[in-house]
Image (cartoon, rainbow, N blue to C red; front, top):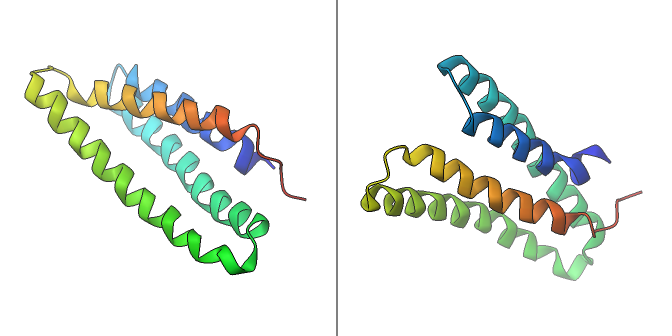
Length: 116
């Protein structure tokens, strides 16, 4: 299943592409690819979770939705920290931080079995 195993790697490489952007249009193209990767990840995560999770624990899926909000808040806090430090291109450092976390989760995800 491409969506679950490789989608975060796709997002990671698109994020690195945006991080190394040299023009406005390159940023827009990379943002499009990041959106494709995140969209596939969201759909795949919920599906795999529901297939593997016992019925009496499916309420934990709500936690996965809450974690999306927590991670968005974390990104905003990191942007404020980078801005407070006085870093000139905050968006590049923020994308780099997000890319590192995406790569870590991608490797952790390789150990999860694929769905039938």
